[in-house]
Image 1: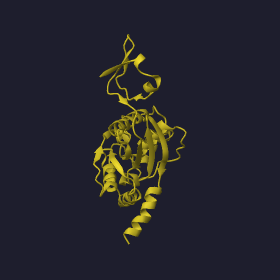
Image 2: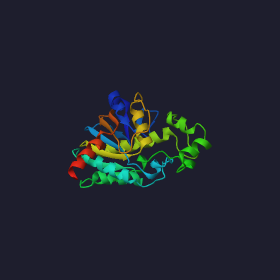
Image 3: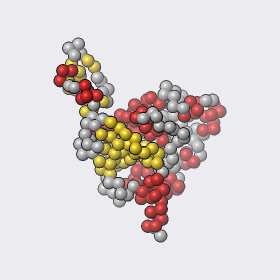
Image 4: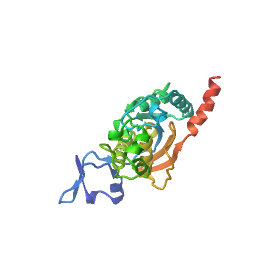
Length: 253
């Protein structure tokens, strides 16, 4: 823990302090900060990938903390994506601890000398009691629940699960950690996560972005960060795996 007096820090510098889980102000106007991240540094560009298509995606089951393997189509599209991202020099790579995410990341990173770091806070929202259930059954047993979820209702909690606000807090914390680990040198960072997690992180940055549906599997959301500010440059883009597929077909002929 360290301390900062208000007369020793400018308003601009104060705004650059984020991720203050144990912040409090004493009577003598000294600001105490634990585990603070000073959010200044070199530019970082995140290439945030939704994992490849899985069996639960195929059969429309609620897939949050629970997991299922990539389908063959999911594997093939991840390979296409690897080709589509081949010219991007990644200085670091992260994924959630879910197998569908790590498998996707490992396909993208094949033949690259980049260590994959896993972080459980990049996982999908926890659906609680309805984990693994068929979507049609959830609609029947919990009328309106999925519609409220898709509307972005922040305080909607799944039965014995998470709500969207909790999801955003842990995803944001994961990105804060990645920034703190890479802000000195900056660079391009690969992140493999999940649809709902990516969508709600994006909305926490820019809520003017229109969300019409779930982002496609293996799509790329590109977000830059510099000196404490995020900019969403691309959202749910399929061009990387589409272009990669064309390239892979040429190479493998």
